[in-house]
Image 1: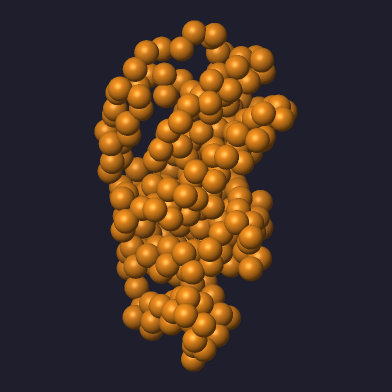
Image 2 (image 1 turned 45 degrees about the vertical axis):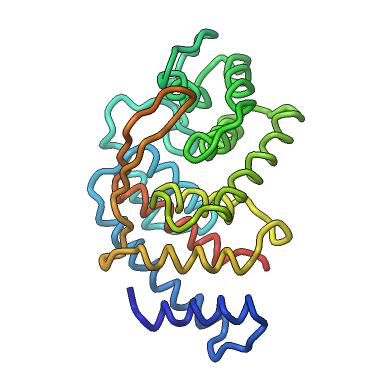
Length: 267
């Protein structure tokens, strides 16, 4: 990544934290970050095949920042996925998953829960989501508790007052975890938390200096072709776990959303 860009971000963060006057303006820093975003966008558009997760993230991006090429990218790449199930904004007319009231054991329960937002009937969607979000979790399970509520709302589920209150608590937990993490615990998870914080947060709920540190870290992690690296991790759920790998298209989509949200964030 361009050394001058890193310097711009560092100096702006320093001026924010200590009250100093930087030789660079916020506008100059954002211009540099837009160059970083443009590289990521070029990398994404070159991806020949991506998963449903990336398609959904790109739809969110297009909703916030209309982009004809990204919209065309989504339309073309979604045709390459065989037997798609319902995903709001991506496959709105595809069949929904038929849910049972009974959940599997072990890590299969986590997989079941993170698929429930795509299911039917609505009363079982709400039943399983209420059980899932009631749990105290961290890392990937925490971020996906929040994600599932977003997806369920987009799929047409009207959240109860308790679910809306819990959604706000989950956002706070995601923010707190990102503030407390030392270094980068996992590239994908780091970008995922940052994206959720910036896309769904408010000025009075975030510390600007922290956000600018995270943005600098994201820029430092970006590869020369504009993508973010493949990410491997272990996801723990209750007493079970599974090894997971997230391709560069996934991490890059998260990075693009985080940068775009930062451009538009109201300080």
